Length: 177
Image (cartoon, rainbow, N blue to C red):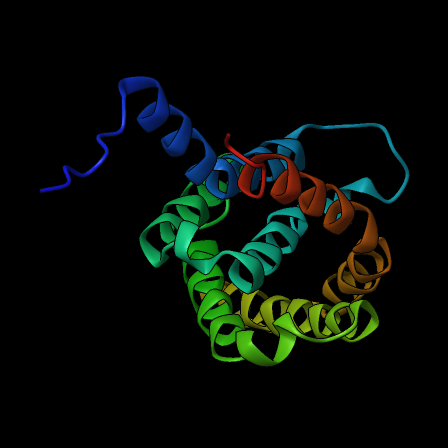
């Protein structure tokens, strides 16, 4: 009778660290988004940085970014940005669900289509956030800041997406001989 190979402590630790990379990188994007930097146009884009990571990981490794983690990241984002508790958690959850429903289509598409789809997802997420803020404040909030934020974030999408691709190749696809 052949005995199954038991994973050693270090192998388990390595696997756990690799599997936590999507959540850790998304949290890092949240943290980068709340750092007050003196970079032109950074402020409007900063709050959508976690959305880029969320979009990327739900397409490429949804098994490593479950809804419970997405919810927690949204709550962390709310706490760090001073947003009403639950707004970004709700927006992130709904956005992750929408991306997941389209994952099979997006995973096989050329980068330009994935980029275009991100712009649509970012617009939808910003619309949801805008509607939530309008409801909370009981008045229609200006839509221009959200529109500019979507346009700038969509234009910058290839840079963080490229970094996320490197993380995926470096941590999740490495040969573990």
